[in-house]
Image (cartoon, rainbow, N blue to C red; front, side):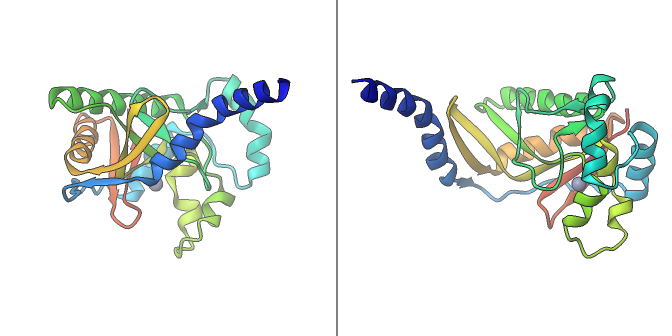
Length: 218
Ligand SMILES: [Zn+2]
């Protein structure tokens, strides 16, 4: 009897993640995804990153040692998702940003949400695919450009990437669907462009990585 009850409890807890797993494999596509071409130069990203960000860490170890203090001092904020975005499983970065960049990310979410409502679309989440990196994690990305490690604004906590390959649709709280819906992704691209136009951020459309590389300005 006890075993049956235990089994039922485990099943109740595991079922949502099981459904989740199945449904994320079902990605759907609607229309051809086209995004705006933003091309703010990297040196501009870097100059804002150096001005508004925190000092870069070369090693993962040094970063781990100081991270908690930076968070308790209010210099870094943990990013775990918001009303209209989710954070991807991160391989080469840490889910932390300086508060101004965290606010920008929330504001992009709000603008995206407003546009979805105006167009009568359902509930969609965009995916944040990279946040703060250390010198070590930047190098482990294995990019061919040898200067990239020292030249990336991702080192300063001011910069994040938003994927545009697809967005997430959640018809029910435990069901996630990756949807490459061109009309929804266009709204995401426009939301980012509006904040860029308002002087809030610098943006590069990275076609190879299928993401917007965004640095906070204000
Ligand atoms: Zn990036």
